[in-house]
Length: 99
Image: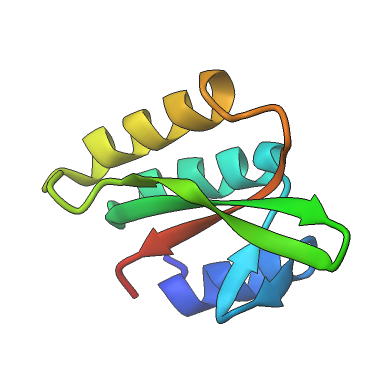
C-alpha cells in the first residue's frame, strides 16, 4: 500500500505547491480523496483557492473537519463539499491531511 507521501508525490504531477499546500483542481482533489479514504487516511480540512489580480489566494471559507474522527466520514463530507458547495470563484482546493 502506498504511503501518504507516495500518494501526494503522485498528485503533485497534476497540481502545484503554494504556501506549503498541494493545490489541485476540484476533480483531481475528489480522486485524491477517494484514494485517501481507501487507505483510511484522515482529512482534517479542505482549503479553497481562487484567482485574483496578484495571483492565487486562499479563500477564508475553508471546511474544518478536525472534529471528525472517522476517515470514511471525513472523506464523505469533503467530497460533498467539493461537489456541491464550492463557491463559483474557487478554482483550486487543497486538503489538510494526517501525514
